[in-house]
Image (cartoon, rainbow, N blue to C red):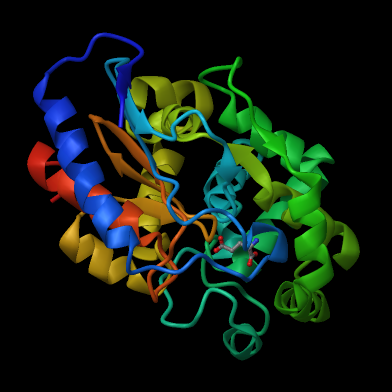
Length: 310
Ligand code: GLU
C-alpha cells in the first residue's frame, strides 16, 4: 500500500508503526465478517482497508483506501453527542453515562430501566441524543456534520440516502427502542421523525483522514476550546473508554488503553489525549461487532508508539 503524508511527520518511526499496524490489521480482518444488519451495506468488499493517524501537531499519516468514504454508522453517535453537548452540556442527565453489559440494541434492559438509556453509545441513548438535537437544531444530521467539519470546513461529510432508507425499512429493533422510549416519556419529538433522522445521521459517509482530523479536538485541549468545553471533552473520552466498543470496552481498555468508538460499517477510531487520533476502516467485524482488522491495527500502532492513557 502507498503511504502518504499530507504534512511533514514529526518522526519517521510513525511510518514504520503504521505499516506494521496495517500488516497486522489486514491479517486479523480475515477472521471477521461483514455486517449484514443493514442490507445496503452487506456488499461492501471485505478487503477494503484504510488507516489514518492525525497528530495534534498537524501531521496526518494515511495509507490504503484512505481516500474512499464509508458508512460511519455508530461513529456518528460520538459526533452527534458532542454536537448536543454544545447546545446543552447537562444533557448527560437524560442519556446516562455508565457502562452496561447488555447488548447495544437491548430492548429488555431499556424496559428494566424504565426507558432511561445507559449511555449515549447504546442505541436508546443515541436515539435520545438525536431527539434532543432535533429539539435544539431542527436537523440532527446537519448539526452532526457541522460538528464534524469544525476543524476543517473543506472536509466532505454527506448522508447516504440509500443506506438511511435501507435501515428505515429494516430497523425494527431501533423502532422498538424508540417506542419504548416514547412510552416512558423520554422523547420530545415524534417517533418516526427521530428514527428517520437517526438513520440519516448513521448513514453519514466519510474517509479515515477526515474522521481522524474531525476527532482531534478530543485529543487536543487547544483545539477542543473551539468545539467543546474542557469538562465535556473529558467526560466524552471517559465514556468512550468505558462504553465505546460495545460489549468489548473492558477488553479494549485492557488490551489497548485508549478511548475508542466503532461502528458496524467497519470504522473505528481511538483517541490518545495530548498526541492524536487513529482511524481505521476495515469492514469485517469480530464477534463483539468491532472491526476485527481495525482493532488489531490500532492495538499494534498503540503498542509500538506507546500510546495508552494508563
Ligand atoms: N445504524 C445502526 C444501528 O442503529 C448502527 C449500529 C452500529 O454501528 O453499531 O443499529
